[in-house]
Image 1 (cartoon, rainbow, N blue to C red):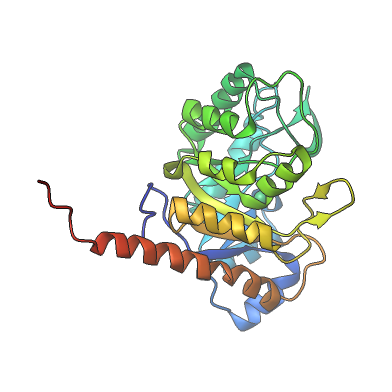
Image 2: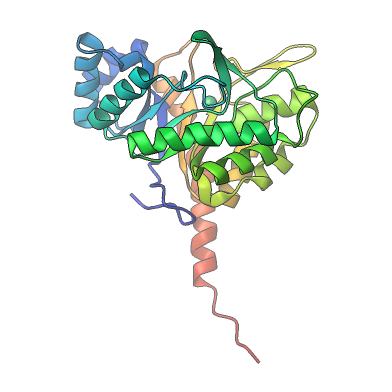
Length: 293
Ligand SMILES: [Fe+2]
């Protein structure tokens, strides 16, 4: 397992999300898969069938934890019980990093279960980074924050989304889960160039990349995770990998889930771009050194 050339995150290869409809196939056929991403919240229980099945997966596969309810950007304090349960699960899975979203979604103890975009302000940078640091310190593993897709913007914003991401990860000293589908969806909804976003992301901070399918409507694009990856998203992925180098890549498919093989084969298309990036790095390493006059 090579470390990424540009950072300290191990390149796990190409994975898919662990989903219940695929359990039977996985346990009976034991397919070769580089790694699975699990949704932490599905396994934050004291005991029971989900944990027993997870243990069987852990016996054979590498697993990385992804969360959907940390709400780093919410104004309220982090829930200590939630953190304790997450930490217990990280010890069980031995996840190399933990990802969750750069968003807010809770107010005064009430949870929206939505991944809401933040205002891109310096105040939000400060409070969000503080919470990410708190989570990293508690869990004692790196945190990678994921850019969300968005459908609304704030008048209060003082910078672009990619500038905000940069400010937060440097203030928090954390990693990035770069979702190129989310970048594409937001770029279409808010009329910015997605290539500019990808080019602005610090390569040394990217732990993982998400790819996914989305749905296009007349006036907006929705991040539905129910389709194969569309060509503009593959193009953005290729651009990201070319800059960042081979990086752990994960296909998200959460609705209208097809067979295991269909999902896995879609994910494995990423290998074409990963190989091209690895070849480019190898070719650069074989170049004769420049002779100085
Ligand atoms: Fe994602």
